[in-house]
Amino acid sequence: MKNMRQEKIIALITRYEIETQEDLIGMLRKEGFQVTQATVSRDIRELKLTKELTGRGSYRYTVPAP
Image (cartoon, rainbow, N blue to C red):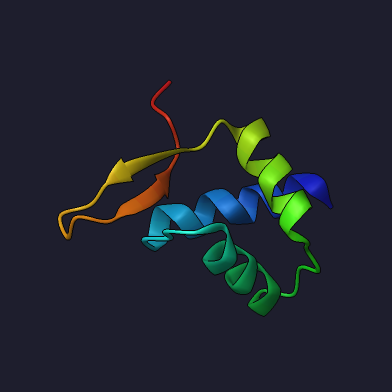
């Protein structure tokens, strides 16, 4: 389940400009994943996600370059 959730996280942040953990939690729940803030926070840390500045002046999660 963890691998599926983390793959979905990568797919979501690649497709959408997700700015907050709350946004990410909401999207995961819509996709059928029962997640908590602690779980998502751990996933973000394990995936080594970073935030980058968007053209609108906000920040979004992104997968770091290899």
